[in-house]
Image 1 (cartoon, rainbow, N blue to C red):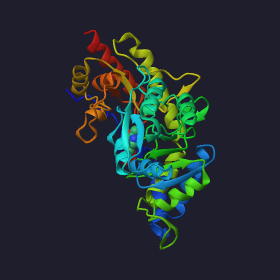
Image 2 (cartoon, rainbow, N blue to C red):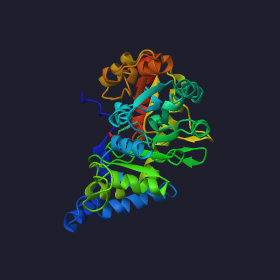
Image 3 (tube, rainbow, N blue to C red):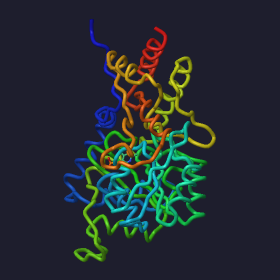
Image 4 (cartoon, helix red, strand yellow):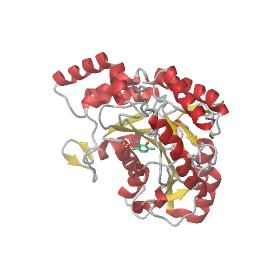
Amino acid sequence: MSEPKKILSADPHASFSAHEGEIRAALDRVLVSGHYVLGPEVTAFENEWSAYQGGGYSIGVANGTEALELALGALGVGPGDKVATVANTVSATAAAIQQIGAQPVFVEIEADSMTLSPAALAEVIMREGIALKAIVPVHLYGRTAAMPEIVELAQKHGIKVLEDCAQAHGAVCAGRKAGTWGDAAAFSFYPTKNLGALGDGGAVFTRDHSMAQRIGALRQYGWRQRYVSAEPGRNSRLDEMQAAILRVKLNYLDAENARRARYARRYLELLQASPLSLPLADDAEVISAWHQFTVRTPHRSDLQAKLVEQGIHCGVLYPVPLHHQPAYAAKVQLPLSERACAEVLSLPVHPGLSAEDIDRVSAEILRWSSP
Ligand SMILES: *Cc1c(COP(=O)(O)O)cnc(C)c1O
């Protein structure tokens, strides 16, 4: 008997194969150009990414974590400050806050969207007072957090907002793209993201010209003029090869997100009959980038094991909430975040899959739930 075809939870190789000819041509162009770091491809990608966002400034950097760090620094967050974020995110979000000497304050999520709760945020703002300098909502799994409410609260209290858009390239909230709500946004182009390079990459997006200039300096030793550091900076440069690859892939982002959305609708329809809690569907308010299709069940390990037996790989994003991790341990009670981390399972939804793959995953889940 032949093994069933493997269905991976992410497939950067498939994403390369789908655009192989164009990517090889782009790399050839870079190889002979003589520019390898922060050159014309990076500038062109920055302009194209800003245009995709509907206007503004993009600054290409080394990865998504450093995009968060540089943006926080440029927003005036520093040692001793507090930054509100969620606990059900990847370590990178908290790492960026800690790297600049600030302290993360973990805020509870909404039960249904699993993103930052505006009501819980209001309480944290009251409790922390002026120590709280910024809010980093995470658009988890591709779905935007409740940005109109979060931005309103932030503005009322004079707190900056930095959107963690690492999972939300192209997502929309109330008619506006993810990344255009806050004072700044951080994107990651890690290979498995909706817009992924073939190595590390990231960008800060902002509509504020002087902030863009500041981040442009901070990413390269604080230089405003070559070899002269105007302020302490670092090296967080994006290279030409990654930028050239991203320019190819950006042309397909909307089509690939549409394919993810089709697969998500199919799952929502087929899994209606299962006992799983399903993610919120797109509606007039939110269009998810469907970075992940994340279901919930108290029997997660059982379901995951059953699917792996069939060659179907799923992600657990994220198994341990940040306030329970040794590096970020905090004595807060976040029952909804804790429960989410215990129950979530992300089914394969990337554009390298076929509609038949989605049907096969769904059929296996239904077989598991009513054998
Ligand atoms: C991937 C990711 C990051 C970090 O991006 P890197 O490029 O890996 O540094 C930050 N936040 C979230 C939510 C992510 O998914």
